[in-house]
Image (cartoon, rainbow, N blue to C red; front, top):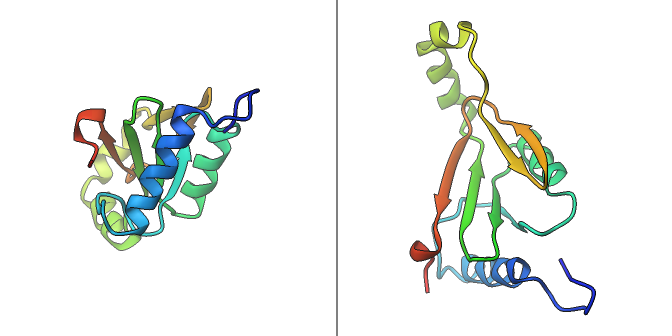
Length: 123
C-alpha cells in the first residue's frame, strides 16, 4: 500500500479512514466482518477470491474515495432464490465478474455488489 517514498497511497489512506469509521460505528453501510482493502494493494484479486470462498464481505476502496462492497449472500436465502430461478441458471449465461488488481474474478450468482461513489461517502 506504500509507494517508493514510504508514503501510503491515496487508496490506502482512504481505506484506513473508512475502516476506522466503520469500527467506531460512524459509518454503518458496511456488512459486519468486512475486510477493507485499498484498490492499490498487491494481490487484490487473490484477496477478493479468498474472501468469496470464505463468504466474507470485501470493501475495495479507491483513490477517489469511492468503494465497492462485494458481499456473499446468506446461503439459506440464496438457496431459495436459486430454486425459484433454476430455469434461468440452466440457460447458458455468463456468470457475473469483477476485475480486481488486473485479475477477472467470477462471482457466485448470489453475490451482492454495492457501489459507493465519492459523493455518497459519509463525512
